[in-house]
Image: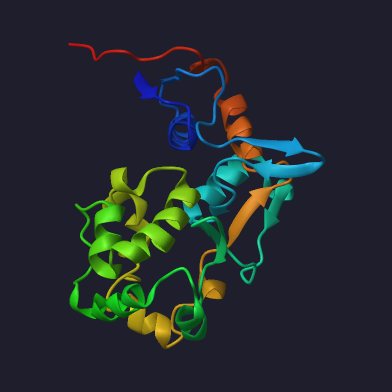
Length: 231
């Protein structure tokens, strides 16, 4: 029997794959609802996601969607939809492309100049956190203003607690982070349209975690916090 602590997206995904493999398991969740930071709802007729708003359709995610029968509920996002970060009192557009990077008010001139040192910083290391890696490569302002909010919003987690070997494992495996990211970005070699498709669902991201929890069924125990480790 495998015990899984937490019924967020990661815990539910593990339970789903263990079920597929026929491995006995039990999921323990301290809250009275599954899904962790993923929560969707309607406000004045508008569908809102209060946590992560999308997921990339990587092979494991596509496999989960097929197992849950949610293919017809998917809503793929256009790659050219602008992204915004709330910083210093207002929404600011995230720059994509050299021209937007030069004009953006998300970074001050020193922060933009700091990006020029990125080719000298070395490749991401699997044993460092995403926050440490991004700060080392792009500078503190770029991390605080752009990378941290985007990465934290996508994963619904603190980048300072996310390790490169887990959060960027697939990307590292494809070698997509080798060489200078800034130079490739400025040359137009990094394109949003070439990225793995992003998707959500008719009723938001919570539809995914609700379907996962329903599939886990009686193997999910809500309102069951884990307070100590077994000796």
